[in-house]
Amino acid sequence: MLQVEFITSEDEQDLIAIAPSANRGLTLLRSPQHEHILPEEERGATVAPLDPREVDPDLLVSVQWLGAGVIVKTQRHEYELDVSAVSENEVVEAKAVLRKMVKQSSARLTF
Image (tube, rainbow, N blue to C red; front, top):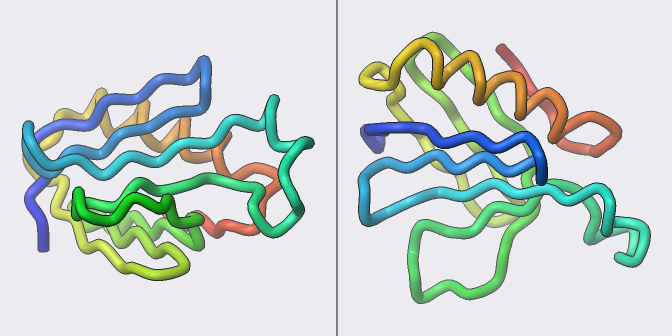
């Protein structure tokens, strides 16, 4: 399980970055204003992989938020995160952005 030090959320572009450490981040991004130009199977939130050698983004399948544990599943990966060190304000903001991010998409969200 990866220890998350902080979460940075931005609502303007439906961006959320969950960072296990300052130099290794897991970034979730959805830009609904541009999705209409993508094929149906490429629409939704993308997840940039933790491994910098992987260059292809991965589509988000689900996020399960279980107390201090978060499981992020993509089409190719599963990330287990410990958010116990993250402030309550960051958690509240992240959950709000996640709700918007998965709205009208095939990804599932569980709190």
